[in-house]
Length: 127
Image (cartoon, rainbow, N blue to C red):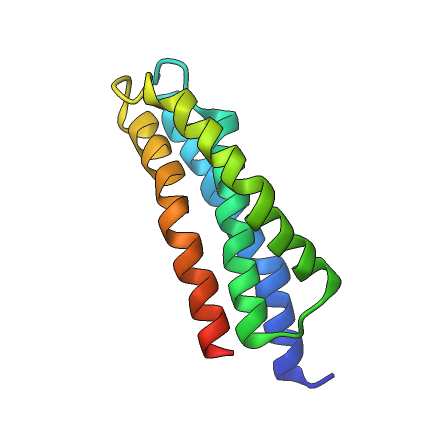
């Protein structure tokens, strides 16, 4: 394995997930400091995990080797994530007036149904 392959693998599978987790924890701390009413902590974790999986799948398709885990990621993003995002959007619809975080949570759930098909089509067209 060459040095560039090691750098790509570490970036995709280690650095990007850690950066996502750090941003998630920073966002949670910010909501707690701002004393947001009923902060969407679990919902945001599921959203971060779903979009993070989509990002990892995209980067794997373009810069790394396809694997069984990537196939499981596609299965999750195709069959489970739409249901999950729909439920989260429904749950946050009534709470979107509470804060900008609730509104962003609601919108990011709805945008999944636009972003994911575009991403899948881009991966298919460009690989």
